[in-house]
Image 1 (cartoon, rainbow, N blue to C red):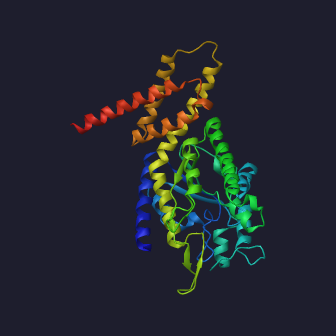
Image 2: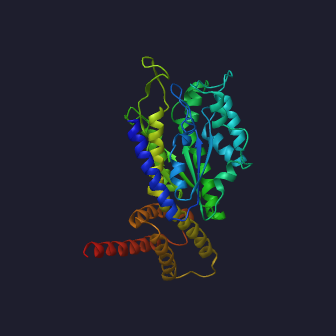
Length: 381
């Protein structure tokens, strides 16, 4: 199982590197954000930051002249999503997050149980030197033409668990915590999307589902809500969770078992594989949709302020000219058009009203029909 997972990982890393290189990317920045899963924590097995578990990604990228930059703004505790938003809003330095993580895996009274966490590992995982002075906000919102800036977000569990384990109100022990975290996640997504729109950044967010315990879909109540975020934000992709065993043998023991809501070593590798696959399939689609959202948002504002009504033919022509170019950037144009249609119609009353729903629908249908005709011509050759 381990060898197969690593083999898959190497192949997906190579595929991602090739795709990014073909798009002119020279620097891939991955930032793991959120809860204990984002921090790679395990109560019974080995703890290691999530993105550091993918050992072959950097090598694959280097072969394509792409540098890899990894960051972790995540914790194993005190990680409800309102805190995550606060980290972003206040631009907390990474060194401060590392101090929290060092405390979390220490022997302090308020630390978390960890296994095989030597001083050398602590210093390697959570360094206090050789870090840039950039904060979370700087890292998350930076943009340039050769940078792929991607956040890997695991969340929507912190408030629920805090309330259960920290003497919360009984009336808030069920859906309240989930709703609280979703509100905070959306605050983070809104800030990032606004920056993409107004400051020409291109940050993407990949939101991972909560572990699928024993494959029973118990967590679908949360994951269905997380998946819907794809339709509400131009830069968001949902990543399916891993089926977790829930019951694991304890570290250095083949006979002693326990319950852990976190992943084990192989499952964390599988999660990394899911993330890489999602990036392969959605990086260009998201990048194109971010550009589309930015253009149409500004265009709708311009139409709103125009002294006389603009003819629908002019609007349709402008839309067609822009979208046709964007569609050409995508290897799977029908996939892009489908996601774009869902997103734009979801947002139309709020952000694109002055462009008009019919103009959006008609333009997308026209481009889709043109693409399908070309596909039929190719098949008949």
